[in-house]
Amino acid sequence: MMKFITVKTYEELSKKAASIIASQVILKPNCVLGLATGSSPVGTYKNLIKWCADGDLDFSAVRSINLDEYIGLDGTHEQSYRYFMNDNLFNHVNIDKANTYVPSGIATDLDAECKAYDARVEAFGGIDLQLLGIGLDGHIGFNEPCDEFVKGTNVVELDESTIEANARFFDSADEVPKKAITLGMGAIMQAKAVLLIANGEKKREIVEKAFFGPITPMVPASILQLHPNVTVIFSEN
Ligand code: F6R
Image 1 (cartoon, rainbow, N blue to C red):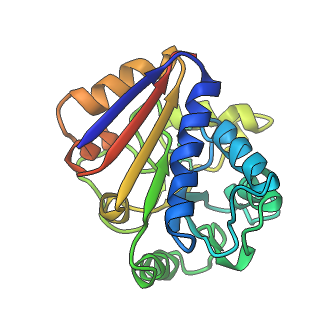
Image 2: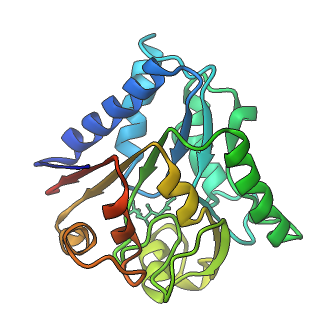
């Protein structure tokens, strides 16, 4: 079943998304959260940080699996997704960092890293709640448009449009890594619940395509139409 929620502001979106994550943590304190980076979840994470500081939320037993990481950046690089997660969430809540997982972008054997990441998700018994953003080309994680859906964690070449979109965080587009390691569609589709957030008019068209258009690997997020428990929150700004 898909729940599609439209709200006016990013603040409303962030509060609703954080409430859904908070209820998961309250219902199952040792839940496995699938987490995303990018600008969409920043407001959501701010709410979670506040509620944790207020004593209303306890992350001490939570495990987390992040979606993706740039190839070539280690966790101390300010644009790495490990750094982002520490900076935007983990450093500010009582989660045990040893229970937080982000794929390694500097593994010498990337194939082994992909397999180990999938084995980790499996050992956890899968993801309870997967938070997702959506790229302008319909990517989720860094599963870019292609001829087929990829099941396992995999190494991908980033699309030109993704590199351009992410250049805002780097000094220039040239500095954006060209490859990333991403959780595949298998782990995402096997998550017990999926929460996708998208804000702003620029995302409207791709959200409509993904959730109301044909299911095709050319619009990777469209596979979520087949997921039994998806909530989409779209905000107009
Ligand atoms: C981030 C990720 C990406 C982003 C997407 C949207 O971990 O997996 O799929 O969710 O690129 O990014 P923003 O939120 O910056 O528009």
